Length: 564
RNA sequence: GCCCCCGUAGCUCAGGGGAUAGAGCGCCGCCCUCCGGAGGCGGAAGCGUAGGUUCGAAUCCUACCGGGGGUACCA
Image (cartoon, rainbow, N blue to C red; front, side, top):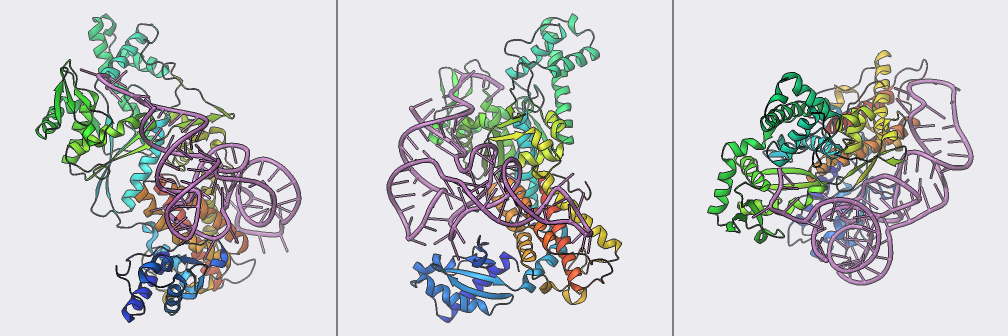
């Protein structure tokens, strides 16, 4: 019995009571009841506060209502025990047969276990990383590469149609600075005061010189243009490769330049003007963002006739909406949070609903520690830690896991020494080790000729398979089963809250629960012992655990090794 | 000044109103005659402060205190 099934049973019990007239609910019976796993063992396998919540509306004291529900629920299938506790909690114990059946359900669903149709029919656009093509992907972009991709996987798993987009800012002043930096490097001069430094600048400049040996003979302006075009192209290629190696592939790489060249920017501005949301002042064109909640109005066309940066975002947003995305999510670093107000106002100015059609997630900064001390970074000096550096230091799995394991709302410290270690202090190893350990048992079982009593894929008929779920009655088996049963809820809450870290934390809990089970319950026959039903039942539980860990790691884009 | 994020165990962090606040590391003490000890068991140790809402607050609201970030006709 899963929490969802228990929830359904409780709703059913309540419905029966209402139907009998034993309880009167003016607002009707709730469709969903929250079932939680109590922290204290004595409070049962599952508990619900339903009676506490409905008491006032029903005009019945909470404990009386709980009593009625308990009586009704006791006769439901798979319920072993129901008791009223405290102010009106309902503590439920599930029969071991019903609980053990969860393992078979997991295997029946296989890699689909945990998936849902929560977001079925929704087209969601995820924009993340979008690092400027003036340098490699830095650590902030890397955080979103890991978290954004995981979020994309989670949305897909919950039924959404996901498009990953990378917005490529190949237009404007920063690109000029980039080009000047390349030119300076090629001329053997130091990086300009407002420019970019670092080995990658030298490498790209050299590469451009290889392709265009004549470039330094050109007039300064033409040379800079060559460095701009070639340099951006080279940077773009490198960024794509880096991301691909990281396991992140975007469906759309959107070029800002495209918006300017096709007149999309002008169309967006015209649209806002038609809606009466722009005005001219001091020779510039302003967007009335203040009336949509921003701190003040914003310039979208400067007095020199050049479009302001925001105008590209207007056009880009409009473009996404015209491509049919009802939900556009943008993930930004904390240094851009000041941008949220105007973006939301812009969304509203188009007549859309901020927070629904446009959602902006802000990821706080990441600090990297080595030998217990923070790494100092400087863009100009080129001592920036890049995505590639991080992967070199701790590996791809550790990098993705380390970044996806924490809520994006808070600043985090990543201790490179810790995450590079192949020991249990390292959470990703802890989880992967559990998977390897599980896989090992399954291999040994196969060597013993012990086949799983259930089909690895497809529906399971307990009568035919010989799997007796009621044999999984050990306390540690129950804990593990209940942990496995949580997975679908963890996935849906991760999707709804846009918080992939919940999946990682959950996997750590499953791994811990598995280790405790393993320590207490012998799975395979010992010595010459003959395999019995209990061995087979436990093997099903082990296989189910493997499946859940594999499914969860996949959502994070982290590998699930069978050996390590 | 204003805006956003964060203050939970010595450290790094979980805890989307619920009954005795968790995990890892570190510290103290234990557990390998067979499935991977990269594991498990026990112990000491904590919600920044003050109010408020609620039957019930680490969680929601307000103020304050600390830390980080942001506040351009730059991109």
